[in-house]
Image (tube, rainbow, N blue to C red; front, side):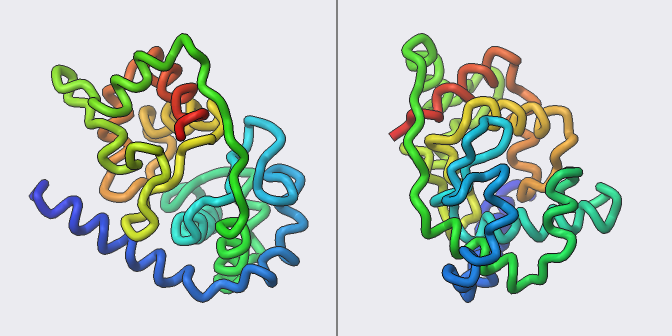
Length: 208
C-alpha cells in the first residue's frame, strides 16, 4: 500500500492547486484587511506566533483556509482546528479563500536567519534524515532550499518563523494537527526529539 502514498499525495496536491488557480489577487488584497493584524499587510507576520504567508503556494493556502473552516464546523473532528482562525474564516466563501490565496502567494516572504550553532545538525537532518531512527529527509518533500512543491501540495518552509515551525512540528507529533496529506508529517514528527524539532525549526529560518 505504501507505494501508492506519493502518487495519491501528488494527485491531492494537484486538485488543491487547480481549485486555487482562479483566485483574483487584487480582490484578495481588498479582503485581506482583517488578516493584517496577525499576518501583516503583505503576509509577513511581525510576530513569530503567526506564520509568514507571503509567497506561500496558493494551493496550500487555499487548502489550509478550507480546512480551518472545516475544523470549525466539525468541532475539530475534521480539518484543522484553531480557535483564532475559526473565527476569521467563518464568513469566507470559497471564492474569498481563492482570492486571499492568490494575493498572499503573489507577495514576497522576507528572509529569515539561521543561528550558527544549529547549521551543522540542522543541515544533516534536513538533507539526510536519520536512517537509524527511520526519519525521512525534509529535502525529499520540501526541496533543497525549503521552497516546497506547489503541484504536490508541499509548503514553502524556508524563511519561516522558528517559533511557528516548532509549534507545528510539535502539533504533528502529538496529533493535535492532523490535516497533513496521507499522514506524512505525523509519521516524521512522531520520531523527532525535542532537540530535533528545536534544531530544524531554527535551521529552516535562513535556508536559501
